[in-house]
Amino acid sequence: MGSKSIVEHFGEVPDPREDNSSHQLTDIFAIAICASICGADGWTDMEEFGHAKRGWFERFLELPHGIPSHDTFSRVFARIDPQVLNERFSSWCAQLAQPDEGEVISIDGKTARRSHDGANGRSALHTVSAWAHDAGLVLGRQAVEEKSNEITAIPELLEMLELSGCVVTIDAMGTQTSIAERIVDADADYVLALKDNHHTLCQEVGEYFEGMEEQAELPEHIDYAKSVDTDHGRTEIRHCWTTGDIEWLESKNAWARLHSICVIKSERYIGEQKSEQTRYFISSLQPNAHRLAHAVRSHWAIENSLHWVLDIAFREDECRKRTDHSAENFSILRHLTLNMLKRETTSKRSIKGKRLRAGWDEAYLEKVIRT
Image (cartoon, rainbow, N blue to C red; front, top):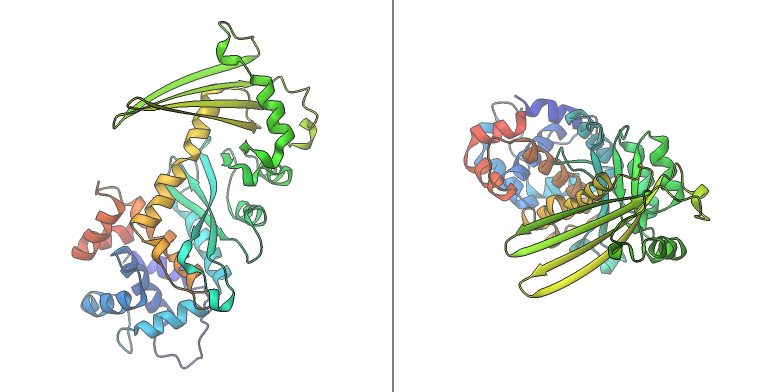
């Protein structure tokens, strides 16, 4: 069945155990993946799921010594090299779908808050992920090393991805000249946020666009777009101004293929309450306000479509796995499961609902695996 191809794909991960291990690594992977799809969020859940579905698993797994214990799942995932497992995950993601021309790929980080191990001086796992907006899939993820930050992890993540023709969006942490150069070298474009980490550039862009909304007629070199969204009693109005008139920027040549700067002003109304936000960006895209506004808005989908789902449907922030490589390897398993559930589109339920249905309905579980 379809799970064979998935298990075989991860079968290249070296087995960290002794040669006399009772349970085959492929069997452990298969049960862990299926259990995660069906709502298992821990090692004991996986063991119990395996026993409950043993007859079903025996149709395609050898299980020479039955269902592995929760201790076996725990030991194996604690010892597997997460770098190798992550490489296999990225390779598998690349086979799912190639991003279309113009696809917005958002790069952003998230912390699994309860994965810290204070007794052993280990901080919580922080992961940087790449989210394809239109495809609705995780294209790759990279853990941030201890005593480091996203600036070092983002280039490693970019190296894993096929970015040609795509638009990469990153928040202010990733607004670095070296990262912009990597994106351009990959034949992609970038939209990078500006904040205090580039105070002078941010200030210059802000001063350039100051007063634009008050002008009755904009100069020819300024492109403008406006959008209005109303949902659940909330109205949000977004204004975007952009220009390719950037020869005056002192740092222009430091940024690879820099073609435009832009400002987006958002007005949010909830009842009689109003809030405003102004954000500044630099981009290798031509100064097209509609396209830039779409890229910026698409970036924030990673919060709702990935990070929020990991917390609500997978309870990631509650996960306390801390032993050795457990936290990172279980994070990879969550991303893998999420992609499989996202690709199954016959059910219109939420990710949480799909996990429940897969646990109840073996035919649906097989559909998720085969998709």
